Structure formats: structure tokens, C-alpha cells
Length: 233
Image (cartoon, rainbow, N blue to C red; front, side):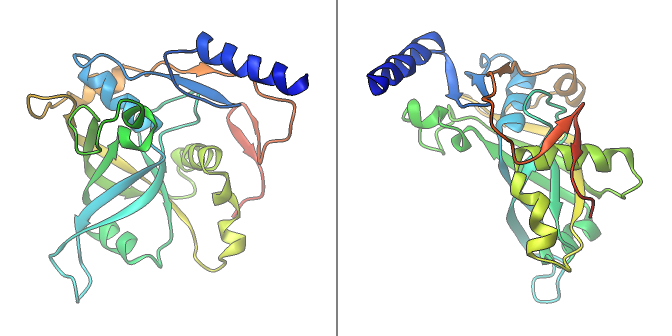
């Protein structure tokens, strides 16, 4: 009987939130915005991406001047608050981090293929309808006294809770927070070629987020007014 009620509840939620891209215990997100809203689509992809490919020019002696890329976990804010600024947590021991901190110029690529939207639509990741965005700009390491240092910490640790223990699990790596200062945006969304949203327009819009009631269970971390109550590092 309990199992039957559970199945009925699942079917009810599915019908109720038919437009939802994903449903979880914590939130659900609506389907991507219309194709014509290029700035909003760009913000949508950035906010819902959990990882991105960072592209840069190598600076190590054995790869000097060679185009390189590396996947990093990212976040532009807690799920209910998109800032549009992608934050990254990495170690200075990472050769890619060393290179991009020195050269600064980089690109960050994110795609809807990271969500289940393209899979539901049976879009291949290379299909232009499976939208992708490239943010080009400068990679900036945040200092601990910088107000954005705390914002980056909250953004990343809420979306990637395991990060808060990296300094314990892999000590001595001196984990750093960084951000991308966006200078150019390139969007591929449906057929017809690239689109170039204005950076100012990108920061004016905000993707719609619907919050899903949280269950009465402990989270990995506690948040009060967007401040993480946890040990510093």
C-alpha cells in the first residue's frame, strides 16, 4: 500500500511539473528560455552547469604556447541566486591553474548536455539545439580578504559540498577561489550560426528558478543568509 501511494505521488509530481527540466528534493528548473532570448539563455546555461571546460594557452616549458583545456567544477551562485559570474576552486599545484593565472586570458565552455534536457530531446551534444555558451575573458584569483572570496566559497560549496573537505582529504594543496571576468559571450543555440549576447544584457537578466520544498533531513552544510557555517581553511 505504501509503495502504491509512493508511485501515485511520483506520477502526480511528474504531471504537475511537466515542464521541469529536472526534479529533485532541493529544486527544479524550468525548461530553457526561448531561442530569441540569447542573454537569458546564456545565463540559464551558466547557472545550471556543474562543470565547464577551461581553455587557455599553455605556459609550461614542455607545452609553451600550445592550446590547452581542463575540466573544472563551477558555480555562479547558490541554486536560488544566479550571479552570472562563474567561480572555480583549484590548487596552485595544478599546472593548468599555474598557466591561466599567469596568462589570464581564457575561455569557459558550458553546455546543456550537462543537464538531462538534451537527452530528453534526443539531441546529440554537438547538435546546435543542445545549446552551448563560451565565456571569454580573464581568469582572476581571489584573495581571502576580497568580499567575493566568501561569495565564491558559498557558491561552490553549496553546489559541490565535497569541496569543503578537500583541504582535509588532500592537505597541503592551498585551495584557491577564482572567477572569470567576462569580456565576450558566444552562444550556439539552434541552427543559423553563432550569436553574441551583450555582456551588459547578460548581467541584467536572471534565469527563473523554482524552489522545491526541502525534506526534514540534514544537509551536508548549513547556510544562514547565504553564509556557510563550517570550518575555514
